[in-house]
Length: 135
Length: 319
Image (cartoon, rainbow over all chains, first blue to last red; front, side, top):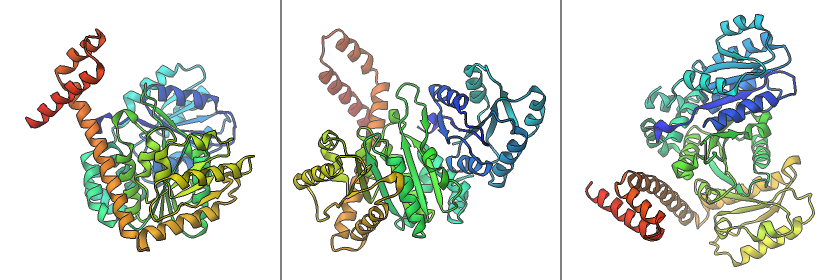
């Protein structure tokens, strides 16, 4: 049935840090909440993330980052998405992100920033209430 | 984007239109049906190849290796990678991109992950449609990777002109327990992980099974490959090409294409029938009563199902 299409989410890790426990915990939580989660693995370039979001036609892109390079990498992901015409996805971020940086990240178009210790239920309800309708 | 935007976009080579159209086809939306109807006459260019076999056989790795080989030969590649949905939450983790990361940056490749959405019935229904859209979009090769479990292995193969069965060296049990249906839908067989002990035994066993299978004029070749290192993959692609030539050009081509078309139509009919009949049955007032009787053991489930189907037929007859 057309109206039962699950929410599709891309969970991606930009940059060079190699720890993806947090990303996998979020991926599993979203799956258990009935979503289809595309997981791309570690060390993704902004181009790879944007291209995956395009090909998978996801409604939501979640970026996980621990390396501290978020202020460099996030704008590049946003730019790569825009250059592909992917302008209608819900963006959120997680990982080690200092409080002082959150305003800057929200200004890039991220609607949610979730730090360590976030209850996955908060992420689930955030995604459910903000994911754009697709088909 | 409405259906004609999507169709024009796809024909103009816009990946965004292709991607959105696939979502519509996957959801079986009215827009999706309109897109398929308009694009179907433009299909037939692509080699549509199904890759099937049990879970853990190395299908994803092999699909990646085949795609790389096709790219070396100058062909563009669409990939449909199907993973299972959870029967409980209906959610899924789709991880095929992990094994094909290097292909993500290649403009000649388009990879789409799909969840089996098992509860909605009929994977072949949507996988066939998605492959058709990629075909019409102009890809030279469309690879469909199956879930690797249950009936979907056979069903998704219906979408493909050539189906590759992936087996492993495994002391024999793996090959011997292969479902009869799988042997009959495969036109190319490959023993993957051929660097493991027992590869030749697996080939011999497959040959033995083929000898007793009900085959048409095409005799499936049995190859060995190591997907991880791409060893044997050029030979595998050669074998796929040979079957495609047979499928398109040999004296048997028309019969083969008709058989394939019939399998497709029947598979989709079965999927729709399954879905619609179950929806009618669930909505039927008779269901709750029948369930109570079975639970109380005053009626057997077979008989209750028969009764329920009778209610469905009455409903349908009434229009």
